Length: 108
Image 1 (cartoon, rainbow, N blue to C red):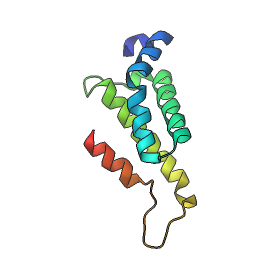
Image 2: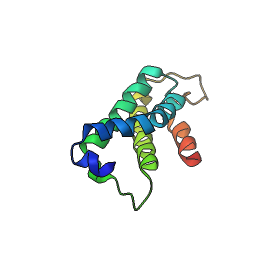
Image 3: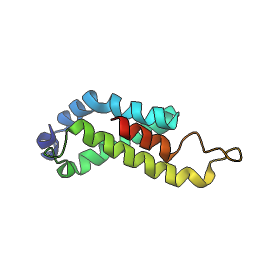
Image 4: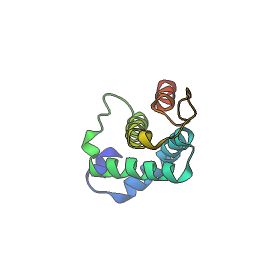
């Protein structure tokens, strides 16, 4: 599948999305608690995969784990951008945090 995507096969990307889109979306949805943001993250992950399929090294893990790591990095980036705008009660962390993303990552 990765080779087909690297060769520009759009149907292979569709197959990858069908197989792993739920994983990426589910991760993003659980962490962000926002359907629209989760959709954006999912789209970004698959766009990144389409643009740079040569970054996938299947000797280091599965495509599933690669996409989960890319999703985690996108979530971390999104939280870093949003962090200054998150309002929390004194002494309480925001509901969506890098800690939440990290907790998910250790369960994968």
